[in-house]
Image 1 (cartoon, each protein chain N blue to C red):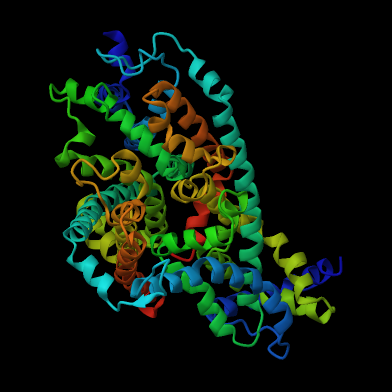
Image 2: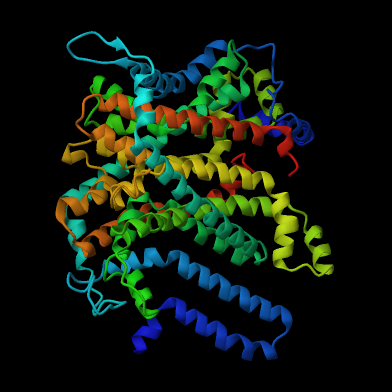
Length: 300
Length: 324
């Protein structure tokens, strides 16, 4: 019984708000009471938003018979990391994590390079048929993936790219959305710097690599995380193009886990937790950039 | 090193240049018009243009071509005009999937937007430290992959899972969420809302922070409560952002593929076959002309949704959007 009240975060927090607030509020000033209410709100919202993830991590600690046992049990009898150990030692899983991670890094670097070069040229240089190339580069933004998914598949198979790392990295590297985002940033950089450098005899390429790139750290982080997530979280494209078990991508592994290995929920939840960790760590590490990134994205 | 020196010498001017630049931010900066840099520029856009040509433009042209021709390995291709389009438009399964897509979007988008608006309004009144904590918290689900969300929610919807346990506390259930045609679609909408909250909330918050506080203060003096302030100040002033979020959210939700693919694979009895899942499954079906049929469907959907996106994009970038 005591485990029940203790372990249900929602009831716990509501009883807290019901019991603690009025008695405490009487002795406090209005501002303090408001502050307390806000903190309670923050705790409640955090618990309910992150509950599914916490539940996933907890399920990873449960034994085979515990994980979907009836009567229901919130926490495991014993916190046993066996599922986590098993899934890490599973060669298919750990290879998928490594291969996907490596692929994501190459993909991210490549797409930053390609998109930022195009963005710089389209923001800062003057050249023949510029308007045409601008429209050409931006229109793919409006082409939904599904409209070209099937023929893209035909194209990559004709190019002999199926079952290679290239098929995962190259087709998605150029991104109209990211180019647009970077161009928006470059448009707002002061012109004077560029003019002074030109007078000093710097070439456009030198201006890009020595002035623009070093100042793009923040915006590169934002688009880089976007690319990283797009690669790491991809499912349909790898499922279509990769059948070689050595190149299995992590989401492909998790998405097909139930049909491949049956309902081993503890193991699957442990694997999913580990697969969700890299993007969460990235978010926590670069939180300032990402949260600001939404503001400078040009939408607002 | 030569590049560093000039930056330092002209920092004084930079401050003076910036405001003028901001006014012209949408236009082409006036930098060195006399210097056309064709070679550099073409080299710099080349990788982007080549990749987009091979992997976006060509597949799109190819898809349009395939939708008008009957391809056979034995004879040359034969022009069939709009025949595939008629096939698709006459297929009740296509219309059914479209209906399911709309139904799905109608669940995901309004609920997601209401929750986001409440969250954003809440974050706005928090102290700086609490606000930055909440912004990250709200964003965490947004970085979770649809695959992880799918398997996680399937696990939570199991008969002995945590959702049915909550129900049992209310003396209800258990419900076979994903095996029941009536509950499967809402059950898939929940993770979709959860995944989408972060971005919507942060965009709304950015909009909220642009509304002058004095509006709220004077409304408060006049005795307007939270809901009155939301309806008479926040929503009208956020009109453009809300419209943008609604339309992008709607087109994204209609195109949802991963969640129903992994959670139900369209079942039970096609209750969760969204348009993209219908296309994906008819592509994988071993029927003759499956490719042509499925990509014609995809093109039809693309034309409809693409038009909406272009319209909204123009609206957002137009002058009308400057002041909501």
